[in-house]
Length: 557
Image (cartoon, rainbow, N blue to C red; front, top):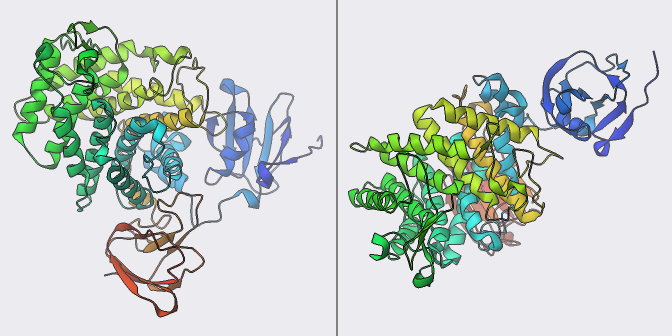
């Protein structure tokens, strides 16, 4: 047998060589580049060996084999390797693999490393880690203010789809950062544009629905109502009604479809928090205006962008995000007694939308030729949100097939461990920090849509028992402290699994995460004053750093 010389790679995590193969022990495969195959193995539970071949454009074959398993030589461009101790997770378990287990009831194409629950957790942790400080700068970034509102809405959808307490380490920082952003920006009525502020209003309303489902009450309803009240002031009888896009310049702006559908959906979302027939009636009035003005055609599914406020002439543009928000509104309306027509309309709009925003059965947008900026690129995220809600309500297989095709296309074009900006392979958008952030928003929205294609085999709390803080199991951690407000993953965090006194002077605590039915006493140095905190919350002390040296974790009350 020809001798094979292995090289060290991935900073010592793997060793690899060209022209070889481990012929046995396959446990999974993933479409990826040869350069990423070792990383794929390191990140996959149970993977010890790997082989990369040119099959299907490049496939990484993940394997589990004994140490010293025989390797064979090949005459192709195949590459093989194995993981080292330095590359493996030494924690109590593998979160990604455990979440992948939720997909055992899914079609095979959505199982294993393609499981949307696992992929979604991967993306969501990236997003939480990118929060700007405590959220006062716009949650993620000021230059992307309204895009950050869309991002918050999508993250709230993902948190809802996963459910349970296992993801509290992500939920509490997001909830705190949203409140901090609202407090610093006049409850989101600060942009001057009705659609911009309505993205935020819808986002916090969605987050509040999640908070209420957990038996708690937050600030989301009041924040959403503040936005709605302002939006409803931005109308008059010109062109028969509607919402001005830029109320500061009504004579030179449009009455847009997006401002109207966001306002309608906001009314329905607040109604879901506190039933109010006036909100429903107001939303229906706006919907009827969209149809009577010609901006929406419920018989053909055609949608137009808006009306020129000076002439009332239609501006002939069609954008996918308008369809996405419209579908969410129609599904919410159709769930109420007496509005069954809304689901009939939703089917027309949904199927027309996928017919015009598709290339070979996969999502495609006109700006994928290379003209996408941060505005055009983010349209697809809300589109996927709307399709997800519509599919969940109807099981429409036309929509389900479109979602699955697009999701798998996203995974197949992932490069360098990143999720892409395009799904059709034709996109030439320049990569930069802002656009990559938007890509994460879009990809998470698509991943949430993919979770609607099947019923998870068990709960996330059960799958992740003992692996993360606050998973609701007997081995669940009770409390964590962190040296940063939102505790992104690049920062220092310490978690405690049981009752007891813990010294934390070295952490420089800025934030405290407390599990359900748990209380924590925080102590200042040298016998200084103490504070008691209780029950499932994320507490932030703006002057805590250097002023806390220990905590008493009292466990479940």
